[in-house]
Image (cartoon, rainbow, N blue to C red; front, side, top):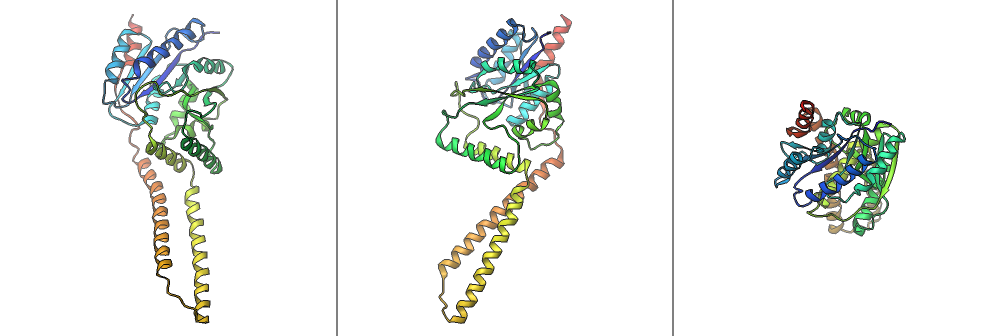
Length: 324
């Protein structure tokens, strides 16, 4: 068996605290796989700087100058984690298979070896799946479980407890890049590729350094993107909710007429105010959900680039290698 070329794509955003440690750990993984002849000698770690404001890019540039197996891509601004992953995938088009992993070392890099084994066994997509959520708060565990159940209810095929730590064959990566949508939710798109897949399980670790780039607000936004990008069920639920409200309104109308005939009329300022505010809130929610879909359509039809690469040390390294 001829060992294939592996590219480890690592999106980074303001990660100067953890980056040296990430490089050290990933280098050891790369060296181990090379010594076992699982990957070729020109395999690389490719850091994607997603418009960082700190010294992230300076560190990546230093790494690439001192290590032939390290490369970097700098995006012109912050395009978001999902777009940074796509930028990395589009750049490493000469790799036989690609692993994507975040730079915070919470996903266990040691299981990359198991992913490579699964690739050679025939899997073109290998998911890194958490074997437990003990490190999460009760709130995060509960909301994550509800999210996966709700997505399954909507008919969206997700791999539970799997994020963006995965291996893709070059063929699977190219198919993924062919999906043209700008509203990205890769956890939902990757299963649509449809090639043979496998799972490897690992225990998620606390962040090695720095702060999380996915606080509660961003997590909720990502979940909303996942729901609205893959299903129109919320719009159908709105219609169902509207029908229920109309039915309740008719019931109350009939009840009011009966009470009027009986002469049992009681002025209800409180119930009136509650009804007005309740229905007003429901209407605003419904309009917001519809507006979310319209906004997605607006973003899609503009067809703007999903990312812009300002500097590409990956291509530079390949070119210099050929000249040597």
